[in-house]
Image (cartoon, rainbow, N blue to C red; front, side):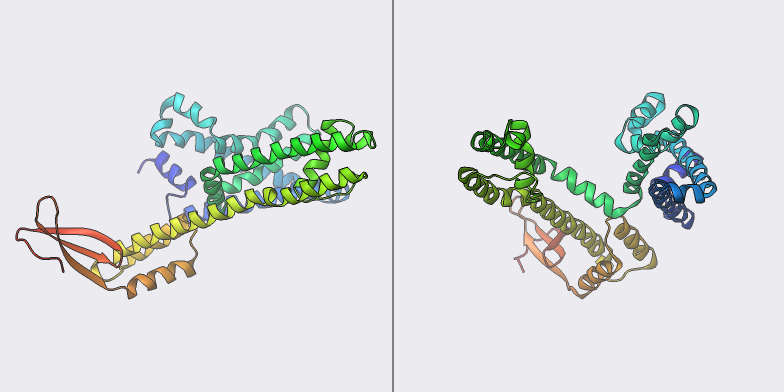
Length: 331
């Protein structure tokens, strides 16, 4: 295997060797440590006391993440659409590659231009997004967000319209009595947003009877709208988890076609479970359920060629095994 392909498989977790797992957990641990370090650096006393340790962690992380970024860009040619120089340029502008670049660019920029600029030190927190590359659970979340993006956008769009309507109405009924809070529609948008999202800071409240009545109506209508995006995400999580479990179950059924699971098949199932973010408990439960199913054979008559077809299946999982020459009744 070529070196570039080996590096690509290690970085993308397509290689399931112990060395690959070590690299994965090392990078994930380093990301977490550097994020905690950036947070602690905001305290001047802590930073001055452990300045040398912070500097060492920053130098180490900068070196590691820079090398990782270069290797990812170089090995991206293993993907067909990113081959050659133009392909690598295209890879550089992918979302995950941009996150990898922003994880190191502020530090290099700070070293050579604005060494003490606080905003550049804060930008290092972008490294926390690198965890999406190493965490199966984060991948699950991103998958749900991609699938439900249209529904979530629709929910926020309707909520935005309701906020504008609420702000306009409150400006009309409270604008004269409270010009500092509702004197303009942009000012009233703050109250409408806080109210419709059920946060309710209480810094701006209606005082007139008409304003209070209108506020009650808005508050009642906002309860359902604020919860709608959360409901969409919850539904999306359920569907995605069930889809992954079904995919895993189908693979188990395929491996159980001969009645047993050998060591290679068990190893492949463990790898698939990790990729699908399925826990060991769920994996063992599915394997146990499939092992308790009885393999059935059913003969059917093809409605097109009128040939007898033997079907091998577990309950509702069916696949065509072979076709018989003689006709037979359905069993």
